[in-house]
Image (tube, rainbow, N blue to C red; front, top):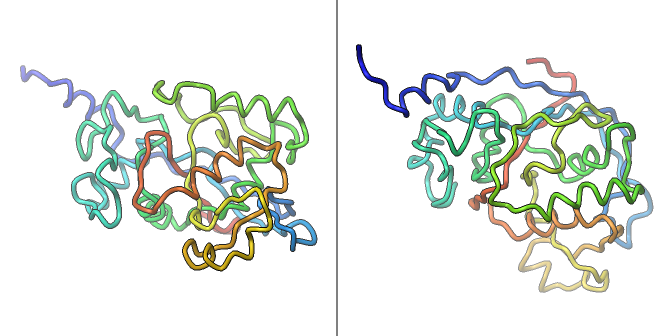
Length: 258
């Protein structure tokens, strides 16, 4: 009888292909974003789209890197992912004990996240799409005016970031989407345009326009600290950066079937 190593057992237990992604149809609507500036005259329209019901998991990303070797740790070019890319995985095609299959994948760059989404006919969500869905609680599509809801999602930020991540698949919000808060931060498409300034007078600063590629943005809802903290994090990143609690989910046209 051939002895099996721990790594071999873990490899055997990890699915070779991830489950088919569940996309939830998000109806069209409108949103007064926390990023609305002084020039905005009303809510931004949101077209219908479909969003993954949970963040992408280690099992799903494992299937992706097995099929796309150029995105394996050690193969992804430095211009597309920093040195910490998938650093918590035991090996390039073995997440291991510290990155269980049902946990959201983290330590992935924007480039890797976008490539994954494109591999299943999708893309990363826009900030407005993400904020639109994230505004919902379990029963209301816009719960941002509820102090209890804001306090509940803000409490996540007081938890130690070193604690093991829970598995993806928490309670669904009013759209049927899970884990928008309380699990991981998430990449969006044009993350580096989210330049935050509490003073709208900074918006016309040409130096900021030249250096950052976007004018400073007024914060319309300063009470929504949890969302504003995400903006602050995303605006500080480059597309090659990875962090231990930054994952992603994908969106695609609502009419598309897969």
